[in-house]
Image: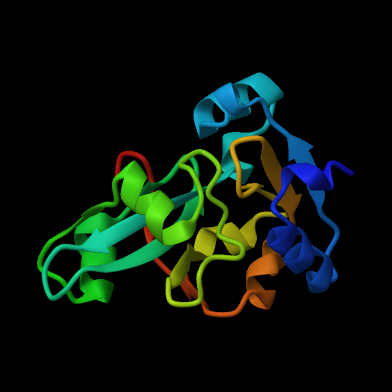
Length: 166
């Protein structure tokens, strides 16, 4: 089942969840969400982006945010307020790799370091299934959103993401 394209720690979390899941191979050149969805015929509304944000005031702090691909992260209101920081920004690719151990385009919200909070937009929980990064640019994971109910340290957040024009 292509387990070798997902880091062993993430495979173990998936198995331990007791949920059905599918590891999907992905050409690394096609790992970015829009390109992946178009090439592999995956509905964008089922695809989850994991974005790392950092507080720029009040000490350097990071948070990982999971949201559906067609939405956009409410960085300036929701994230900034929850981080209690006057200024926040998207983490750079280098910072993302440093705090998650994963490359942009392959970041999964599963198996993140325990000191990195994970906030999940509540809309994700309404989907019948979701597609997550696989921990590398070579894979994606199809799994029910209930995985987040079985992932330690997750906070489900209403209003974390906005509609594209909102």
